[in-house]
Length: 295
Ligand code: CA
Ligand code: CA
Image 1 (tube, rainbow, N blue to C red):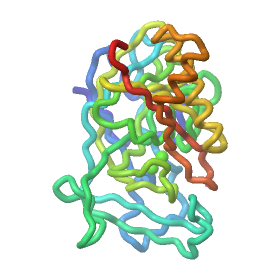
Image 2: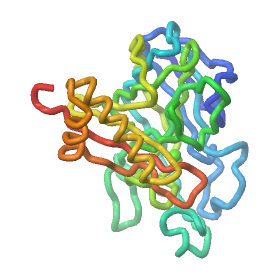
Image 3: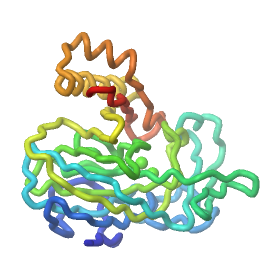
Image 4: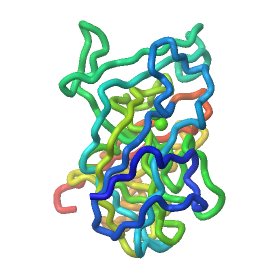
């Protein structure tokens, strides 16, 4: 299995980046990822007000997928997410939902022991590994790894975890796949704008869905479908994800627009993925629809 080491990092998803490797569809490979500060937070004295050493939120890659063409989709199956022994989080004045209450920068490091986050002697809980950044190269200008968009990028959906099949649009020949920003745990919304940021190893299988023709990423599990949206605020992000799901249900279940809207409203769940306003990143949201019996 090919390993893409974490010395191959970038700070944008950009077709101008030279591929680190070229793989055949159906291949498994492992992306080594840096944490969001490229390993520079090593003590609780390292506050998040310091500049990033090279850039924020690095992603590993890109990987060229042989035969992928614009109009296709990559299907990236998340097989395994390995975590380092320790991660960090922090708070910053003015950042995130409660930023107005925060007076000083604080950093905390948390150990991962036996699959548990050790928050304190009293509080520990199982890890919930997920991938914050996954995407392909946009057709036009590159997009910084801090931002989400139709290409994927910094989506921060907690559903990008083991078992997910992430469908990503292909905009350029070879697709160029990037992966980064692993979290040992993140709550929906990432309320302070920082999760439990950690170095990781993400083992994936990459397939091509020829001509799938999607506009933006969606995620498939054996028991549910998930569409994605982003925007300047949560409402816009949810609207985009809901539009995507309505269209999906019309095509998949042969429903009228009215029927899809009704089904979406009475059975679909709108979920906040990234709500950390105010911040420098867009809000992201998703809509989750169970695969109903017979569908
Ligand atoms: Ca993120
Ligand atoms: Ca992060």
